[in-house]
Amino acid sequence: MQRLKEFYEKESSTGILLMLVTIAALLLKNSPLAELYNSFLHTPVAIQFGALKIAKPLLLWINDGLMAVFFLLVGLEVKRELIRGNLSSWNQATLPVIAAIGGMLVPALIYIGFTHREPVSMHGWAIPTATDIAFALGILSLLGSRVPASLKIFLLALAIIDDLGAIIIIALFYTSDLSLISIAVASITLLALFALNRFGVERRAAYILLGVVLWVSVLKSGVHATLAGVALAFMIPLETKGEHHLKIPLAASLEHDLHPWVSFMILPLFAFVNAGIDLRGLSLNQLSTPVPMGIMLGLFIGKQVGVFGFSWLAIKTGLARLPAASSWRQFYGVCLMTGIGFTMSLFIDSLAFTDDAIYQYADKLAIVLGSLLSGVAGYLVLRLDSSTDQT
Image 1 (tube, one colour):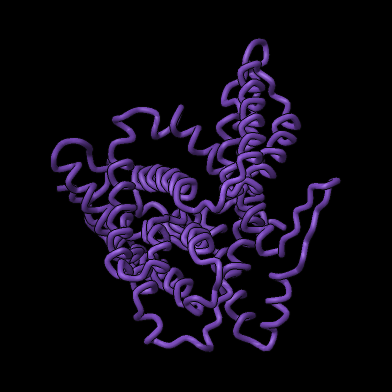
Image 2 (cartoon, rainbow, N blue to C red):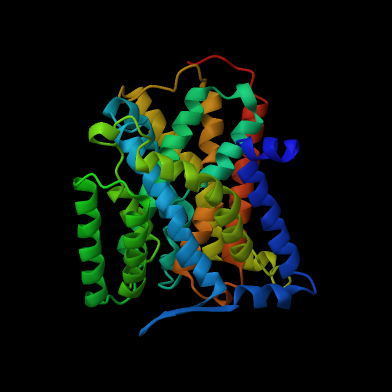
């Protein structure tokens, strides 16, 4: 039990768990148990309340339902950082904001450069723009004191801005035919949540109940259901009011309670159901086609060039400063880590290409390989670094 407790408390534990379930999914998909794995993904699950019925395979319940809880946690973190944390002032936010813009823009341009002649392929332009913070921070934690705390804060802030960018991209570019009735219900629910916030209501049950209504209405509206989690997060009170000001704020307590569920159940389960790549039919020729190349090079080359290049310009022009107690080599190593897209890239991939047969899993394998290259390269640069020269 003590060893289990120690594993739970380590920063690297989520990354290790994601790696293990990814390997498990790959082994199952490429073994005689592949049919059992496929049957698990497509297990029908239905919930009905009167005339309202939601029937989806288990894969979509995870991608549309459980991932909404993940985005609820992301929304709470974004709100906290914007109001009180590392993004609450321009001086603190300048470098991660500029770095994140470069880290989204350059990978997208690389992907577009490979796929601009293929309209269907262009749907995946946002796949290499994401950063998997769990994996990246997990690898950094393995390096211990070799990485200054300021660089970990920089990476965390950049990843939060990345997540905010992903939320905006999903809202604007990955929606289907819109239902005005469902949008109206969602809007009324948001107003009710806003009213709860303004009147200082801090009962968790009230927000959860309206959050479920919001999720169902967003799901039926054509806007991706995970955005309901973000919208709910921004309506949850960040501070307590009146005589209850000494209590832990609802947003903080909810973030604390959700963190282990997201880290040790939702993200591993998402990785397990989405990382099952059938390698038996894949070849090097398929990996060298535009979509896989755009993803792989977008993550491994685009992320490091965008984050490091934009940061270098910001620092050299005086807009920002290199994180305290770090060298340029250490900073470059962390920039390499931002190419670990994994769960967020897989999620955007599932929105862009709903049919795995389109690219025969080469797109997903490219995400794994691009993330792996970025993680290994970043680890080696930081592991071998002995410089303290910040010039």
